[in-house]
Structures are given as C-alpha cells and as structure tokens.
Image (cartoon, rainbow, N blue to C red; front, side):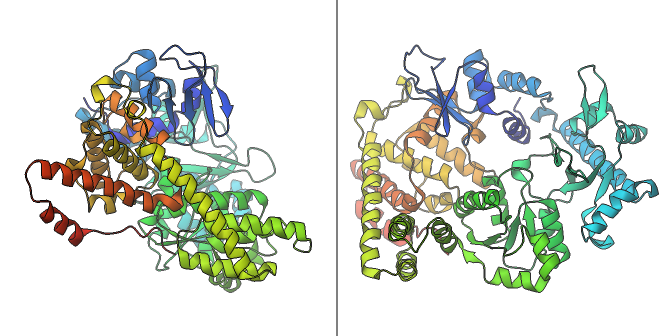
Length: 588
C-alpha cells in the first residue's frame, strides 16, 4: 500500500540525514557538507558527500544518491515501505497506510481535538487566580486582554502531570498525548508534562487548527523557549506563527519578525500582517507559503548581529520564492516590540515606509564594515560593493546603485563602472565555463552510472538535467518551463519521468524538493536526480539565461527529431515564435 505523503513529509523532516548516515559512515565536515568513504562501493579517497542543507547524499564515484529514505533502502537492503517503517520506529512514529485513510483521518482529527483541548486548558490556567504571576507577565509586556484572547495565550502550571491528568479525564490516552508532543517519558518509563511553568503560545495553522505550542519562561532560566517537537500534525518548517491571522490582512506586504512576542506586539499595534518562523531559520517552504498571499515581505529582525545575519540568509530564500524583499532598520531599539513601546505605532509605520530594499540593505552592510576616512578601507569597500553590484540581474538596478555607491565613496561613476564590469565579466566567464562542462562534458562522464539509463543524445540530456536542477533550485520556474516544453520533449525516459513527477507536485501544490521524490520514483532515478542537483548548480543571477540556454537545446533537439520523422520544421518554428516567453528574472 502507498504511504500517506503528509506522513513522509513529517518523517523526512524529523530524520536529520547527517545523524542517520553517521551511524554507518565516518563523516568529516568540509565547508558546508560532510564527506566520507562510500559504503556502496570500495574506494580509498572519500567521494561520498552529505549535504545537510538539502538533506541529500551523493557519491561522486558510484553515483548513488537520494534522501534519508533512499540511504536506508540501500544500506539496509530494504524496500521503500520497509525503509520507511525502519526510520519511523527510530522516531517513535506509527506508519499510516493510504489504504486505511479513514483511520488515518480519525487519528489526525483526534490529535487536533487534543491540541484544541490542551490550548483551552492552558488558557484557563492563565486566568486562574493562583496563576496571577503568569497573567501579570503578559500585562507587563504591554498586552491587552483582547490581544491575549485573540492569540489564545495561556499558562502551563508548574506541575509534572497537570495537563496529563486534565486530558486523561477527557478520555485521551498517554499514547495520544505523547504523539502530540505534549508529554515526555523519563528513562524510568514515567510520563511527565513537557511544558511546565511557562507562558504558552498556541501555534495555529492556516485552517485554524492548533497544531503545536511554544512555551516561554518568565525569568532568566533556560531554555528560554521550548517548542513542540515535529509531530504527525506539525511540521515547523512548513508553518508560520500567526499565519492564520496574517493571511486576512489588507496590507500589500507581510512583516517577517523573529519571535512570538514581536509578532503579537505588531498585531496589537495594528500591523496585522506580521508572522514569524518557529524556532528555526526561515525555510523555503515558509517563503513559498507567504508567496501565496503576498508579493512583498519586509524583514524586521532584531538589530543585533545574529538578527542581521539571519536577515541576510532570509533575503535569498525570499527572493527564490519570487517575493520582493525589503529590510527594516530599527534605530535605538533591539526589536519591533521595544521600538513600538518607546516610539509608538505611527513611528514604526514610518520605519516601514522608509525600509530599504534588499540591495540597499546589503550595500549598507558592506559599507558598515569599512572606515571610509581611510583610502585603503574605501578601496576595499568599492571592490566588495562591485562584486555585489555585479550580482544584480537587472541592468537598470545595476546602473542606479553603481551611481549611488560611487557618489557615497567619492569616486567617479565611470571608474566604478569599470570595476563592476570586470566583476560581471568574471562571473560570466565562470558561469560559461561551468555550463560548457555541464552540457559538453565528455560523453562517458556525462552518462548515468547505471547502464540501463544510457543517454542516446548526451547534449540534450545534459540540458534536461540542468532544467530539472533549475526547477529544484527555484520551483517558480516550472510554470514558465511548462508553457514552452512538454514531457515528450525529453530525450531521456528517466528524466522525462522526473519532470512529469515535478508537474504532478506543482499541481498538488507540494514543494518540489529532492526528498519529496522519495517513494515517487525508482531508486535508480533517485540517483540520477541527486547527481543532476550536485552537477548542475547555477547561481541565482544566471538562472534566467541558463533556462533559455537549456530550452534552446531542447527546442533544437525537438526540431531535429521532427524533421527526421518527416514533419515540417517551419510549422514548429511558427508555433515556437507564437508562444515563446522569455524569463525576465525576479522583479523588484
């Protein structure tokens, strides 16, 4: 029987591939990845890599690759469903089968009902006279009763079994409480409430269901925040705090803050489009979730160094989701909550109006690192700024910001243009060299490792690999690509199958990632997919041109094939000219 896709998403989210692989392979970190000797073939030099950011593995020697489920299938010699059960047991998860979907829905509804009742319990405890200190915590933070009610804020009593007793009295079992992440189990086998003596923040999904909780201490004890673990109904990488409220906003932008209290303070001050990630850095899935409801995001992270580094990372993720990005600077305060308390909502609104787009923000961050009164420092600033300017896709933006940087540094625009053009040419040369290696690689090296998957037309297949890699890097490209090519245009049957699966994922509104293919395609195709990702990297500023190059190769191949079949190529050309749509790259 097929396994429910939501369960697979939760399982792969909970299984860190570095941890799983480390049980079988001695790994050493190098850069952002880990390397070791491949367990699937004999080798003396480590060619086996694990990429934690993508949650995939790939061997550059034998070609094995995939996500955490594929690794267990290969290393343990298991079929897909058995590998899933193997990992699920390690995570304490029960594998639901699609064939018993009624039972699956019943279990899900039961957990959602439990979380709703737990939220009501915490809410009632907040307003109980003996817990006045918890209520006063929120009052001291400036929250009104209306705001507390709107967000369903609560309090977890300083007890190891208060919630457990209350929920069991309602008929819920300890197993259900454990599955919901509300209780834990000691080494002695004793169950206990996970949240104790903490003010509680319910996490509500876009359908209005309580799916998790965040708990904060009221003093300086640690950990400051405790969040629900990943469960069958909660994936923290795919949800945002207050998204259930923000999706109703009439604003044409979202505010992305760091913490629960910042978001709540923003909503109370009238900024009802504020959201926050859930105890982790912003993810691709969260960015895509925002893109369903808005075209613009204003980042208002904390003013400290950690907050600004997180903002830099978030900019790229939001850009990849096709969102316009601005960054708000908060003068004289560490976060939005503190600023609003000191200056008021109207002052904060003016900050939003004056927020910098991500280009201005990054250039200012570079400038902040240099002392502009010293010539050597000024030269360093100009060289680094030129690299940043060269990365801009839009020529008009590059022209405007080159002028601004030149004026700021006290040099002529022409001299900085020369430096920017030099950096731009270097980027183009590197990209062309990479693409030449990709598309015109020696035939043997370009072929898949599996003999059953040989490419009949190597240049065309390499372009098809590149196209698939581009879609994985930026899901928003798929719509443009589907308007110009069909699965029948792929020369490789295996790459065609991967592309068809991508189209199905888009139709299902499911994020298109390597790990999402687990169980959807054959193991050998998983190897091929992972290889394409590892070999066909294209920097963000070159994706538009790379897509056009790959499309051109696929169109030529299609014309050649149809000519060979006796069809009139001029009719094909006329159709192409009529429907051709050139990718313009991210706007704004």
